[in-house]
Length: 138
Image (cartoon, rainbow, N blue to C red; front, side, top):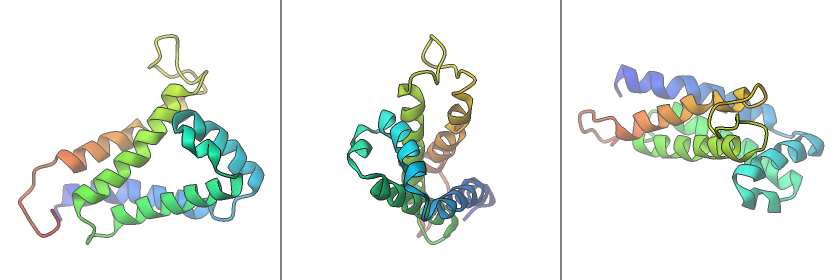
């Protein structure tokens, strides 16, 4: 694995893994609040119970974070996981009322916390599109 790929994977991997671990066993009220926003971007998430959603979110973040950190997970597989995760975050940002200015793209004060996660989507694209020497990891 190249140094640039390792950096692209390690930084978001550690951050997302830590976030997922922090959400383990979250109270139902917290899960319900997060689920309300998440269902704006990914409507099927609204069909889960808050407890199911809390587990799905925490385990999902742990899986994405771990896939980025584990060097034996192929770059493109880790990139796809990160793309799905960050794409959902961007969908939530773009579809939640009050997150964007009238143009539908620029963040409002409330939307900045979600819009800043667009860097995850850029990292996912870099992992998916990078052309390195062909190894067993690809």
